[in-house]
Amino acid sequence: MAQTLLSIVIPCYNEANTLKDLLQELDLYCRDYQWKVVLVNDGSTDQTKKVLKELQDYAWLKIIHHKLNRGYGAAIKSGIAMTDSEYIITMDADGQHHPDDVVNLLHFIREKDADMVIGSRKGTPSSNPFRHVGKSIIRILAKIMMTVPVHDLNSGMKIYRCDLAKQYLHLAPDTMSFSDVIALIFINHRHLVLETPITIRQRVKGKSKIGMQTAFQTIMEVINIVILFSPIKIFLPLSILCFLVGFIWGLPLMIQGRGISIGAMLGISSGLILFMLGLIAEQLSWLRRNSGKNPES
Image 1 (cartoon, rainbow, N blue to C red):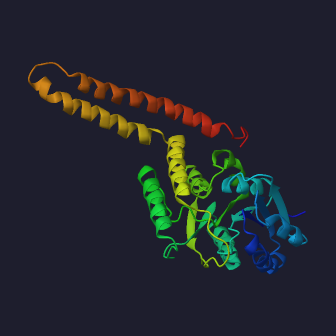
Image 2: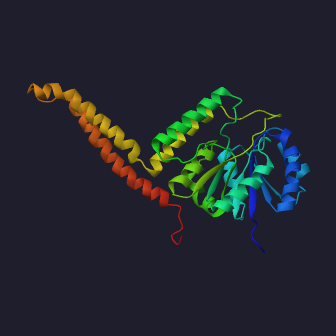
Image 3: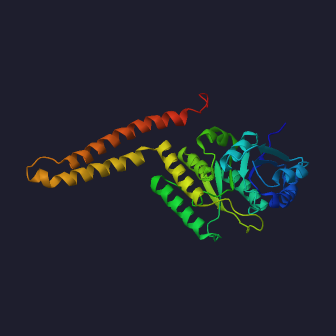
């Protein structure tokens, strides 16, 4: 049997009002293009399970139920684990993503022979100014700490190679920051990551699950992923800063021939300790990154 070309993974939490319209819209595309859809009900507390029971007759649809809410990333992981297609695309269950963009992203990734393509929402106005500010902070932070060749890291619509996604799932978080982190993982492993514009429709039913807590979690995950892939980028600047502060603090006393102050010694010692911690962290980082790899790959 030929391998399925594309599987669509849709994490879902309390989206009972949008599911029927979404799956009906996908039906024509899935039948025409032979796509598969894996929809993961992540412990919804509304009528999602009941609605999905009424819609489970679609031949191209596979439904997974989490008994409890595990998180956006955990839902995507469950969906990816159940797929065996060449490509996987993630899209949201709120109806804001258009199936036409699935076609466009699939064509783009094959044409460019890319490993991941991000559906970019650049230029699309955000309905929530606080979310816009949060996304900007995350994007700036990521670009300060590492080379990021794309704009819209946290877009929920991404297409990537299934084999690579499965290889890196153990590194990705279970939270809403999955979208940002999986992109950074691909980038740091030197895979070809591109982006292309997509269309975002206004949400007409339900409400967004993204808040300030999500932004804070994502910032922490970005820092974690930098520490995972290149901890020296964090420890070295801190080491240099402490060393310089200690040196500058003690310079007047040294010029006067009065020795070195306790504060200066503390700064210099802290700099040296942070530098050594950075070297140790680099070794631990290498071990963790390679812990989930197949030795034959």
